[in-house]
Amino acid sequence: MEQTRVPHVLLLPFPAQGHIKPMLILAELLSHAGFQVTFVNTDHNHDSLLRRTDITAFCKRFPNFLFSSIPDGLPSDHPRSGIQYIRYLFGSIKEASKPALCQLLISLKEETGSQRGPPTCIITDGLMSYGIDVAEELQIPVIAFRTCSAYCLWVYFHISKLVGEGEIPVSDENLDKPVACISGLENVLRLRDLPSICRYPKGNPVLQFFIGETTALTRASALILNTSHEIERPAISKLGPLFTNIYTIGPLRASPSDSFNGVLLQEDRSCMTWLDSQPSRSVLYISFGSLVILTRDQILEFWHGIVNSGKRFLWVIRSDLIIGESGTGTVPVELDQGTEERGCIVGWAPQEEVLGHPAVAGFLTHSGWNSTMESMVAGVPMICWPQLADQQVNSRGVSEVWKNGFDMKDTCDRSTVEKLVRDLMEDKREEIMESTDKIAKMAREAVKEGGSSYTNLEKLIEDIKSMAS
Ligand code: UDX
Image (cartoon, rainbow, N blue to C red; front, side, top):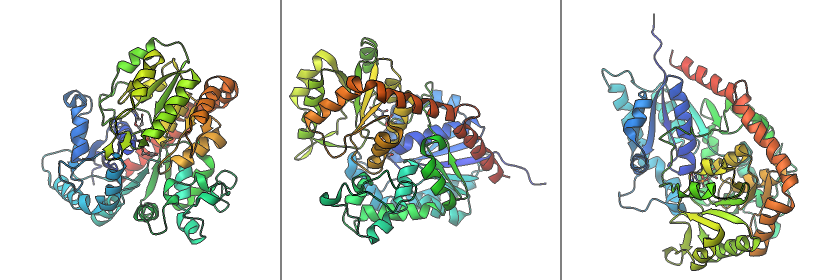
């Protein structure tokens, strides 16, 4: 009789912060289920993670967990932060990393005397369809994990149609035109709420990349999403017929005790001490995620608006956040001066802990999907300033569907910033908190025992086990 193997899952995240973190949380959950796990980063990200963590302690806690790495195709001294790097990856990751992944899989197959052996399932990022190619070639079952919202993914499936109808590229004149052709979202979106790539000219390589990767997704045997039925039901039910299985398992949350929380940058924990000394629900947390960049003028508009609101603030200003004429710009002196009294600025914060801190009252965010889910589950209302990819769709969801914040899309002038900060923290606080609390409860219920995401995770685990038999 054939023996059932211990399932071995190989996870392949897209090499960016917003993709690595949720994939690593999933990997940890699968490891807890007793699976062998191989987590494959690019060499650069692998080194960054190792620098921030105690690998020995982690391996003691997770003896069935192996980190591996493959090249991203760039020389070792090439800059690897910011949106330019991500655009490079869109163009070249497949070519650069696919042969290395094949090689890794062959070496895992040839490993003798180890419990691990070749993977029984590959979970590849939904922007890394070369993981699907390789899995098909080697006849390994493959599941795709798309880290954006279900709403946005459903929109991505309509981009070719919108291009054909002449709605894309979205022009300045028709930004407020409603989008009628996306079933389930008829009354939600305007053209300005479509993903940022819809503003690129027809034939643009990044636009083509997203169209290609979205089509390729349906070749995977199933789809994982970091969301829950309760949060995005209309889009999830529309996506249903395109996949054999959809596992909505969110909101995924980093375990507080986990020494490997998937963070690539050095956290500055001094902001937690600063928060401890602030009054309850008095602080606006400001962060634009790992990729968004701002001009000096934009950051000054934000700064004036926030200072004029009179509110306290904790602001994450990454070293590469501000773009100057020749690359990374410097932090304007005004920020330092105005911060002393009631502000705190750090280069990178322990975001989930910050959002859970009793001093935090609101979040000025770029609406990355991880940040959106983290704020939702923490019950913190948002002001959204979306810039890239799915962020435009997410911010519309916040203002129109979940009603747990305001959408400040396409503007950041100081008077708008000031007004929305006051609305969020004072003038419209009561009404915004009513829906924020409701959605937070829904999100937390989903991942509790018996909740929809909890049950889907159990099903995912069982289905992966059956692939190993
Ligand atoms: C990107 C895209 O922008 C996003 O829209 C997509 O859904 C995923 O990939 P990113 O821009 O980094 O991600 O934003 P986001 O999805 O919000 O992820 C950022 C992550 O970094 C969050 O998990 C957040 O907790 C973490 N973070 C951010 C920190 O830990 N500290 C910080 O100071 C800022």
